[in-house]
Amino acid sequence: MTHPGNQKVPGSSWITDHFSERALQDHGSGWSALWDTKNNVLWDRGKPSPALIDLIEQRKDLFQPLTPNGRRKKALVPGCGQGYDVVMLALHGFDVYGLDISATGISAAQGYACNELQKPQEYNFGEQKSVSTAPGPSDWEQTALEGGEVQFDIIYDYTFLCALHPDMRQQWSKRMWELLRCDGYLVCLEFPLYKEPMLPGPPWGLQGVHWDLLARGGDGVANIGMAPEIAHEDQLMGQFKRVLHAKPARTYESGIGTDMLSIYARK
Image: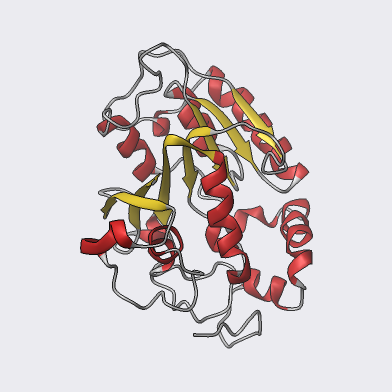
């Protein structure tokens, strides 16, 4: 399978058109330009992920904010945007880092966090409504902590991978492995799964991409149409194993009926 690149097609979205004439090395500045012109509203969901909230509240066996020795677990949200998920995770007791390529985006997230951590809104919680653990700190980065030795107990990806050109997917997988602790979890709200993977992006359709990259060890393009080899996962070349794959009971409106929630751990 080959990708058509960023060529324009009838019905392509405004964001797709924005990137259609940009070289791959200019995509970062393209995202920053959208922030600087206040076009971040095109992907702003206005609240933290309901699917992620339910996961961390309902799967306490996997997502306790403190280790048995009392260390506060570190979480990373790459492509954090306005910072909704960063703040929500901090309110649930995690030490959270938000990563975004735009200085304007980071500034907006810092402002949101300052207000929200002082007076949290109800949308930060599911059935739990509140948490007993004190809120953890939040920090903000413009680079993927390059050259550092920081590793995370949790990495959450929602719209980071789908924003990256397919040629960068293997780099994404490699960096996730490097940043994740050996006993940590990579949580992916897989989106958009309703979009044909061959159509130009961003956002790029991700049907079959996570399994191919993480479990199969593929390039996230050529074999994404193949059925997952679940029975033989241990024999695959990927550096991750899938711990969970389920349709979330709640998610953003744009992904209702199609979003899938997956958890991967390092082999």
